[in-house]
Length: 205
Ligand code: 5GP
Image 1: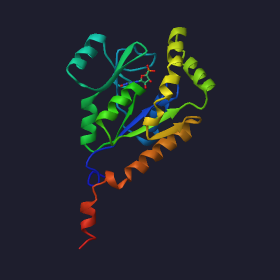
Image 2 (image 1 turned 135 degrees about the vertical axis):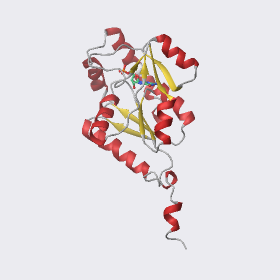
Image 3 (image 1 turned 45 degrees about the horizontal axis):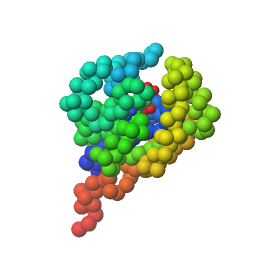
């Protein structure tokens, strides 16, 4: 693989809160062994979340220090907390020829798009507004004010859908996972992403 590809492929999965980004990414990791970037955040861990596995949980001061040292590829304040992707982890993986998925919000995606023009941008959509409400409520960790905050930003977030390459409706987890997997496979076969010179040398003489 590394002979055909000079670098790994960066895949960004984004969409409104409640679209199921986290669940789809977990499944992609479980089923197909995808590499998912671990973000840093200042929000507190939810029950069952582990530092260094789900997120790098940082206090505000450490996050801001990393910000001032320009260590983030992108960052955003989402619902009152900082979230960000560290440059180093992503660059190292891509340079090793490994693909990596970022599961980030829309503000973060707009920043990544300025740096990585060749990444694959996938927008995940909930099947309906009612289902979206249910999903946000079902998390259990949401207070009424955090629910309102998440729900009220959805309309604004959907306006950015056109700056993505693909939209996947997450009505059924398995089929959403298969769609994302096949998008990635298709993108891996784009001639412009491949380094085919060596391969062609054997045929052209
Ligand atoms: P949660 O608190 O539910 O884990 O995540 C809240 C939101 O933050 C989700 O929309 C999630 O995609 C987004 N998010 C998680 N990590 C990052 C990150 O590194 N950067 C950005 N911009 N958003 C993130």
